[in-house]
Image (cartoon, rainbow, N blue to C red; front, side, top):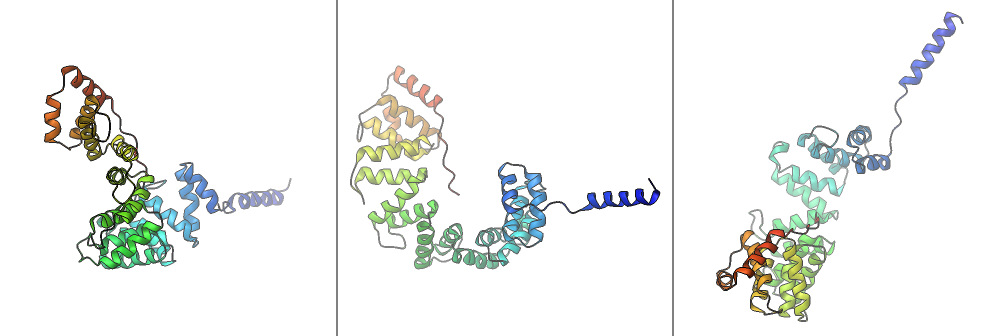
Length: 305
């Protein structure tokens, strides 16, 4: 074989190994990410983001934010969320707004944050709608603008945001910013409860037991209280303790009442009335209640983000 042919073969091999790597699709990148193959996902998504793929920009920003496949850096996350936000992505606009008031991500800009939050809300991001509602409700120090607060909380609630459903339910329950409306309150609280929010389950359960805004049903109300209590909510645990201690709403069960009271106290919910109740229990009843409380493991709370 001549030297010329060898040189030609060598050149062809160099060309073979210097051809650019195959470009992954976003579907393939997402599959890598879902499989927690973060380094591979990061290496594949970065070129797509740099080429202008908006979804890739959002994923790249999140990976920088969470330190997935790369070093965690809020500055890079802000940069890429900003690019995707400028391109009109509602999720990026929401996250960019949050990073603009995050001191760890660089200089804060509350005014710009509010503008991007409003854009994300207008583009249908229900988390942005919820946070915008909170701003108008005065949550972050501004004077309340109740009509706008109700408008944005209502949009987020209608879109299925459980936090907005819960807060809107409380506003109708208390008549805060809107005329008091127990029927509307139970409607929104029940939706949040059905999504697994213990706080909503507690409020809805109490209203069902009272027959406030909904047909009274002691049994159903008690089940919602138990749902919240079993997920570690101390107020719900206190309510159950009172019910079983007094026999009001359910058959009296001193040991069950004592167990829930012990758990509520552990969660920071003390009750002088129940302290007196505990003093009247036998040694055997107290021991059994303590045994049950020690064995209690709270059920997991649903991810509501």
